[in-house]
Each structure stands twice: as C-alpha cells, then as structure tokens.
Length: 353
View 1 (cartoon, rainbow, N blue to C red):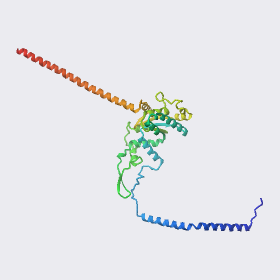
View 2: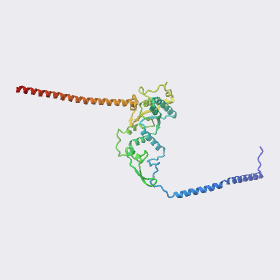
View 3: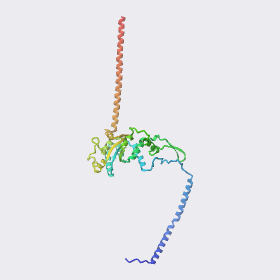
View 4: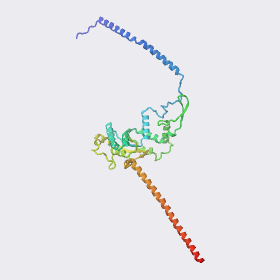
C-alpha cells in the first residue's frame, strides 16, 4: 500500500465540504424549531397561571391522607408488608402446621410441594369442598422474627378497644378516625405493654403465644389449610411427617416420585414441631390426634351428640328413679296410715258394742 501524502489542497477541500454540510443541516434543523419554541413558551405561561390560581390553597397541618394512616414503623418496607401478611394469615387460617427446615434447595422445595399436592389431590376427589381445600393449601417459608411479632399482635392487640383520634379533613373540618391497623401505634403499644414492660404481669400459661413461642426457633415453614379437615391433615402428615401405622408413607407403586432422591432429601430436612388449630396450640401428638379422627369432623360431631343424648337420658332416668322411689315411699306410708286408722275405728266399735 503506497504511503499517504499530506496535501494542503486536500485539507482545504475537506474543510469546504464539511462546512457546507454543516450549514445545510443547520438550515434544515432550524426550520421546525421556531413553532416548537413558541408552543413551549405558551405552555409555560399556562402552567404559571394555574399555579398562581392555586397558590392560596393549603392543606391543614394535621391532615392525614386516608391511604397513608400513621404507623409505628415505616409502612413501605418489605418487613412491614410481611407483617401484615402474617397477621392476616393467622386470623383467617384455622389450621397451621409448623415445620423446621434445614437449607432446602429450590429443587427440593419444588419436589416436596409436588408430592404434597398429589397427596391432597387424592383426597380432593371426594367432593367439591375437598377440592377447594386441596387447591388452597400452601407450604411456605416464614421469617421467624416477623412471625413472632405477628403472633403477639394477633393475641394482644384488640382493634375494637382503640379510641378514635380527632384529625382535620381535606375541607378543614375536624373528624374522628380510628387507627387500629396492625402497623398502628396502638398495636405497638399493646404488644409492648404485654411483653416488654418490666412491670407487666407474667403471661398466663393458657396464653396461645406462651405455648407456641418455644416452637419459634430457627428457620420455619408452615403448611396452611383453609378448613379443619382431618382427612387432608392425615394426607399431609403421611407425606411430610410419616409415622406408621397411623400415617404411613405412600407406597412406591402409588407415588413413585415420593422416593426420588431429590424429594427424599427435602423430606429429611423437614421436621414437624407443632400446629395451631382453631386458635389452639397443639404439639406433635395433638396434631396426630386431630389427623387421626375417623370420619372427620362430622363423625366427631355425631359422637358429641350421642354423648349429650346419653348424658341427658341418664339424667332423666336418675330423676325419674328418685321421683318414683319417693312416690312409692309416700304410697306405702299412706297405706300404713290408712290401715292404722281403719284398725282404730274397728277397735272403737267393738268397745262400744
């Protein structure tokens, strides 16, 4: 390749071409800019007029937006949203099983949930209600510290006892509003007064929080069912915490995926520690007792009705027996008195004759 030769004429020609090109582009670009500049100035003038009209409007100093009530902790953080989710879950779910888990991988969690869904699906074929319970069952990982705070709020915070607060509305009128949500200062004060005050009385042993607090240790996962169904509970226990002969593990022919190494690794890292059923705390044996109810809640209700009927029948028999014995005693006494009276009359007749 021949070497390049620097030439002054070539440089002058290049500068001429570039200058002409820049001038041409500048002329083209300047044409549409004139009306745009005018429109921007007009919009600015309109906005300035609107601002000048609204300059006299001012919100009250103690105005609280309805969508952002005052809270004891920042409401827009992830922990606050988790706390609200946990309190809603505790109030709306009648059956919760608590598990401790040990570093399950995402693949192991997927295998565990798959086998649990299959086990509950076998019960779901019995009716529409069973299918609804199986579809809404969830196994999820919980934040232990936030779950502990949520349990305190659910037990110690009474929203109906919070006094209303007087604030200013958007129009400036004074109105009364009750701030009793789970993130409110009232909930914070109620929990602190019950658990963190040095002069607070000790919590009773019958408290649900006192009974469940020892279980809230380490990483936790919960299984939630939307209804108390012993059949679904038994199916879940046979998969997550099998204990033959009451809750045997599914057979390999029926559930081959249960014996997959990944699934078995996940099941071995789960340990059932207790449960919360109808706001009552149950240990491992109590959970197994609920899951072992034959015939479900209908059979339990039938047994209760039978016990009440038998108790009522026994009470009726006892009361009838007492009244019958009293009646027989009075009748025998009456007959004796009548005989004595009749005997006395006969003796008087003999004496007079």
